[in-house]
Structure formats: C-alpha cells, structure tokens
Length: 207
Image (cartoon, rainbow, N blue to C red):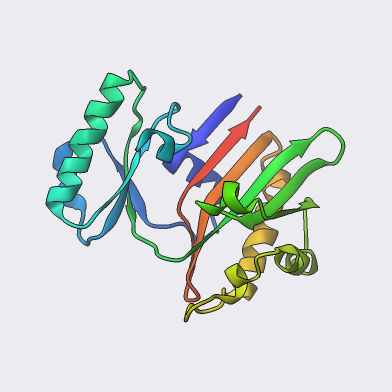
C-alpha cells in the first residue's frame, strides 16, 4: 500500500480548498515565509499522527520558526525517521471537521464526515454514506451530527458556510471514481470559520 502525505496528498485534491503551503528541507528556506503566524509540520511516513510526536508547531516569528525547524530536525534524527521535509502552511483559525473515505468490502467506497481535530476521539461524532453522494446526502450528513454547535457556531462564532461544505463533501465523495485505487483518505482537520473552509492536512492510501 502506498501512502501519500503533505504536498503528495494534495495532488489528489485539486479543485478543493487547500491551505497555502510549501515544503522546505533547509533552514535557509525559512526566508520564504512572508507572513506570520505559520504552522510548521514534520512530513514523514513515520509521522502520520503528528501531535503524537510533537511534530506540529505554530510559529509567530522568524525566531520561533528557526527554533521549531531546529527542534524538528533534531527530533527526526534522534527517532531515526525518514524525513520528506518540513511543511510551512498558512495559519487558519476555526472549528475542525474530518472527512474520510474508506473502501468497504460490502459497500465499496464510503464517505465519513464528523467532528475533527482534537474532537475526533473525545466526541466520536461521525456519520457515513455510500459514495458518491449528492447535495441532499451531504445535507443529511450535516444534520446527523449530534454536536450541531459545530455547524451553527457558539459564543459569537459564525455558522459554517454550509453551501460550501456540502459542495466539498460531494466533491470528495467522487474522488474514488477518478482514483479507483484509493483505499483510505483522511482529511483532518478541515478548518471552518464562517468565512472560509480550508483543508489543512490530508493522508491518502492507495493499493
């Protein structure tokens, strides 16, 4: 099974709203950063769950970016990880969702949608449909969530752009038609803040 991460995973997601990013391998390339804050991530086949290895940091200044880069390089060397590079990504604030695709032996590809990021394990609030779906199916998936505050917002937060979110769900559900070898796809988190929706991390496995 082949696993695609970072910029390699993004190749499957053309036409979807991706957070701006670039990959670096040398500290000198930190000069490419024009605006802070940025999110920095270790990209490695051994770093699927980046938070487990302290492989994701937010840098608010060039000094913080330099320190994080140095710490990442030291950490990956100590752990003997195969490093693809360090991803520099625009900082996107918002509520976190997850979208997944899995090849099921009975139903073929199914799409999953739910509370993402830090809420995946704590809320366990997800729903499934058989791929591909249409906008009515997508609307049903949004309604299925028990934690509707993620959709409507809370404490002054704006509601999600549900029209755009439904379009994204429909587009993702059609990816297995284009890439028939997809076994698993995880978009987590999908960041929403009322104004925009951005994919900030993705993992794709093919046979």
